[in-house]
View 1 (tube, rainbow, N blue to C red):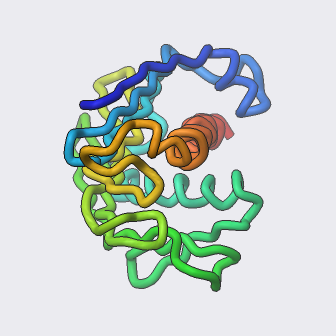
View 2: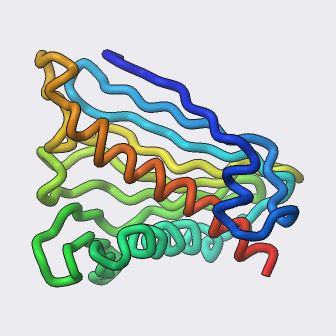
View 3: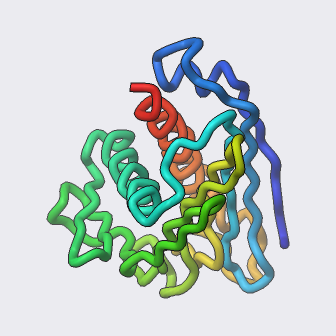
Length: 196
Protein backbone atom coordinates (compact mmCIF):
# COMPACT_ATOMS: atom_id res chain seq x y z
CA UNK A 1 0.00 0.00 0.00
CA UNK A 2 1.28 3.43 -0.93
CA UNK A 3 -0.60 5.27 1.81
CA UNK A 4 -2.73 4.24 4.70
CA UNK A 5 -4.31 6.09 7.55
CA UNK A 6 -6.21 5.22 10.66
CA UNK A 7 -9.01 7.38 11.94
CA UNK A 8 -11.09 6.86 15.04
CA UNK A 9 -14.32 8.54 15.99
CA UNK A 10 -15.74 8.77 19.47
CA UNK A 11 -18.84 7.05 20.73
CA UNK A 12 -20.29 10.51 21.30
CA UNK A 13 -20.02 11.28 17.57
CA UNK A 14 -22.06 8.22 16.64
CA UNK A 15 -24.58 9.04 19.37
CA UNK A 16 -24.90 12.55 17.97
CA UNK A 17 -25.55 11.16 14.50
CA UNK A 18 -28.51 9.12 15.76
CA UNK A 19 -29.87 12.12 17.64
CA UNK A 20 -30.73 9.89 20.61
CA UNK A 21 -28.03 9.96 23.26
CA UNK A 22 -27.92 6.96 25.51
CA UNK A 23 -29.63 4.58 23.06
CA UNK A 24 -26.57 3.71 21.00
CA UNK A 25 -24.62 0.77 22.40
CA UNK A 26 -21.31 1.31 20.63
CA UNK A 27 -18.11 -0.45 21.65
CA UNK A 28 -15.80 1.21 19.11
CA UNK A 29 -15.34 2.77 15.71
CA UNK A 30 -12.38 2.49 13.37
CA UNK A 31 -11.62 3.37 9.76
CA UNK A 32 -8.66 2.93 7.43
CA UNK A 33 -7.90 3.56 3.78
CA UNK A 34 -4.98 2.81 1.50
CA UNK A 35 -4.05 2.61 -2.13
CA UNK A 36 -2.38 -0.45 -3.65
CA UNK A 37 0.56 -0.12 -6.05
CA UNK A 38 -1.77 -0.86 -8.99
CA UNK A 39 -3.89 2.20 -8.07
CA UNK A 40 -6.83 0.34 -6.50
CA UNK A 41 -8.38 1.74 -3.36
CA UNK A 42 -9.01 -0.37 -0.28
CA UNK A 43 -10.92 0.97 2.70
CA UNK A 44 -12.89 -0.22 5.67
CA UNK A 45 -15.05 1.36 8.32
CA UNK A 46 -16.21 -0.73 11.25
CA UNK A 47 -18.14 -0.37 14.45
CA UNK A 48 -18.28 -2.83 17.34
CA UNK A 49 -21.68 -3.16 19.00
CA UNK A 50 -23.06 -4.95 22.01
CA UNK A 51 -25.82 -6.56 19.96
CA UNK A 52 -26.41 -7.30 16.24
CA UNK A 53 -28.32 -4.72 14.18
CA UNK A 54 -29.65 -7.14 11.54
CA UNK A 55 -30.67 -10.81 11.52
CA UNK A 56 -28.07 -13.36 10.47
CA UNK A 57 -30.14 -14.23 7.40
CA UNK A 58 -30.59 -13.36 3.73
CA UNK A 59 -33.16 -10.78 4.86
CA UNK A 60 -30.54 -9.25 7.16
CA UNK A 61 -28.04 -9.14 4.28
CA UNK A 62 -30.56 -7.40 2.04
CA UNK A 63 -31.20 -4.85 4.77
CA UNK A 64 -27.47 -4.12 5.12
CA UNK A 65 -27.38 -3.10 1.45
CA UNK A 66 -30.73 -1.30 1.34
CA UNK A 67 -29.96 0.93 4.35
CA UNK A 68 -26.60 1.98 2.87
CA UNK A 69 -28.14 3.19 -0.41
CA UNK A 70 -30.81 5.13 1.50
CA UNK A 71 -28.07 6.89 3.47
CA UNK A 72 -26.27 7.86 0.24
CA UNK A 73 -29.48 9.59 -0.83
CA UNK A 74 -30.05 11.22 2.56
CA UNK A 75 -26.52 12.60 2.99
CA UNK A 76 -26.56 14.12 -0.52
CA UNK A 77 -30.05 15.59 -0.09
CA UNK A 78 -31.19 13.24 -2.90
CA UNK A 79 -28.83 14.99 -5.32
CA UNK A 80 -27.45 11.46 -5.80
CA UNK A 81 -30.15 8.81 -6.08
CA UNK A 82 -29.81 5.05 -5.98
CA UNK A 83 -31.74 3.36 -8.79
CA UNK A 84 -32.45 -0.34 -8.42
CA UNK A 85 -32.42 -2.08 -11.81
CA UNK A 86 -33.34 -5.73 -11.32
CA UNK A 87 -31.12 -5.97 -8.27
CA UNK A 88 -28.20 -3.92 -9.58
CA UNK A 89 -27.73 -0.37 -8.28
CA UNK A 90 -26.91 2.82 -10.19
CA UNK A 91 -26.02 6.03 -8.38
CA UNK A 92 -27.25 8.85 -10.61
CA UNK A 93 -27.35 12.63 -10.32
CA UNK A 94 -30.96 13.59 -9.60
CA UNK A 95 -31.98 10.07 -10.51
CA UNK A 96 -31.86 10.66 -14.26
CA UNK A 97 -28.45 12.24 -14.83
CA UNK A 98 -25.24 10.44 -15.65
CA UNK A 99 -24.39 7.24 -13.80
CA UNK A 100 -21.79 8.10 -11.17
CA UNK A 101 -21.28 4.49 -10.08
CA UNK A 102 -22.82 1.19 -11.18
CA UNK A 103 -22.97 -1.89 -8.99
CA UNK A 104 -23.97 -5.39 -10.08
CA UNK A 105 -26.47 -7.67 -8.42
CA UNK A 106 -25.30 -8.34 -4.86
CA UNK A 107 -24.11 -11.63 -3.46
CA UNK A 108 -25.63 -12.30 -0.06
CA UNK A 109 -24.18 -14.83 2.37
CA UNK A 110 -25.52 -15.75 5.80
CA UNK A 111 -24.63 -18.14 8.61
CA UNK A 112 -25.55 -18.10 12.29
CA UNK A 113 -22.70 -15.64 13.05
CA UNK A 114 -22.04 -13.90 9.71
CA UNK A 115 -24.10 -12.03 7.14
CA UNK A 116 -22.88 -9.93 4.21
CA UNK A 117 -24.12 -8.18 1.11
CA UNK A 118 -21.44 -7.60 -1.55
CA UNK A 119 -21.95 -5.53 -4.72
CA UNK A 120 -19.45 -5.78 -7.61
CA UNK A 121 -18.37 -2.37 -8.94
CA UNK A 122 -19.19 -2.30 -12.66
CA UNK A 123 -18.34 1.25 -13.71
CA UNK A 124 -19.71 4.80 -13.90
CA UNK A 125 -18.11 8.24 -14.17
CA UNK A 126 -16.39 7.89 -10.78
CA UNK A 127 -14.82 4.52 -11.66
CA UNK A 128 -11.76 4.47 -13.92
CA UNK A 129 -12.64 0.89 -14.85
CA UNK A 130 -14.85 -1.94 -13.60
CA UNK A 131 -13.44 -3.90 -10.73
CA UNK A 132 -13.63 -4.41 -7.03
CA UNK A 133 -16.59 -4.49 -4.70
CA UNK A 134 -18.33 -2.79 -1.83
CA UNK A 135 -19.37 -5.11 0.99
CA UNK A 136 -21.55 -4.58 4.04
CA UNK A 137 -21.15 -7.25 6.70
CA UNK A 138 -22.02 -8.13 10.26
CA UNK A 139 -20.17 -10.74 12.31
CA UNK A 140 -20.56 -11.85 15.86
CA UNK A 141 -21.85 -14.23 18.44
CA UNK A 142 -23.56 -12.14 21.11
CA UNK A 143 -21.77 -8.85 20.42
CA UNK A 144 -21.37 -7.79 16.79
CA UNK A 145 -19.05 -5.96 14.40
CA UNK A 146 -20.55 -4.19 11.38
CA UNK A 147 -18.28 -3.30 8.46
CA UNK A 148 -18.45 -1.31 5.25
CA UNK A 149 -15.53 -2.38 3.04
CA UNK A 150 -14.29 -1.40 -0.42
CA UNK A 151 -11.77 -3.66 -2.14
CA UNK A 152 -10.10 -3.32 -5.54
CA UNK A 153 -11.89 -0.11 -6.59
CA UNK A 154 -10.25 2.08 -9.26
CA UNK A 155 -11.71 5.58 -8.77
CA UNK A 156 -11.37 8.11 -11.58
CA UNK A 157 -10.30 10.78 -9.08
CA UNK A 158 -7.57 8.76 -7.31
CA UNK A 159 -3.87 8.76 -8.17
CA UNK A 160 -3.02 6.32 -10.97
CA UNK A 161 -0.44 3.57 -10.58
CA UNK A 162 3.07 5.04 -10.66
CA UNK A 163 1.86 8.63 -10.21
CA UNK A 164 2.64 10.75 -7.14
CA UNK A 165 0.10 10.50 -4.32
CA UNK A 166 -0.85 14.18 -4.58
CA UNK A 167 -2.45 13.54 -8.00
CA UNK A 168 -5.26 11.78 -6.14
CA UNK A 169 -5.97 14.72 -3.85
CA UNK A 170 -9.48 15.19 -5.24
CA UNK A 171 -10.40 11.62 -4.34
CA UNK A 172 -8.84 11.90 -0.88
CA UNK A 173 -10.41 15.27 -0.10
CA UNK A 174 -13.87 14.72 -1.61
CA UNK A 175 -14.98 11.24 -2.68
CA UNK A 176 -13.38 9.25 0.15
CA UNK A 177 -14.64 11.75 2.75
CA UNK A 178 -18.17 11.45 1.39
CA UNK A 179 -17.91 7.66 1.67
CA UNK A 180 -16.64 7.98 5.25
CA UNK A 181 -19.53 10.32 6.15
CA UNK A 182 -22.06 7.97 4.54
CA UNK A 183 -20.58 5.04 6.48
CA UNK A 184 -20.91 6.89 9.79
CA UNK A 185 -24.51 7.77 9.03
CA UNK A 186 -25.13 4.22 7.80
CA UNK A 187 -23.95 2.69 11.08
CA UNK A 188 -25.96 5.24 13.06
CA UNK A 189 -29.09 4.49 10.99
CA UNK A 190 -28.74 0.72 11.49
CA UNK A 191 -28.34 1.27 15.22
CA UNK A 192 -31.25 3.72 15.48
CA UNK A 193 -33.62 1.48 13.49
CA UNK A 194 -32.73 -1.45 15.75
CA UNK A 195 -33.92 0.50 18.79
CA UNK A 196 -37.14 1.89 17.27
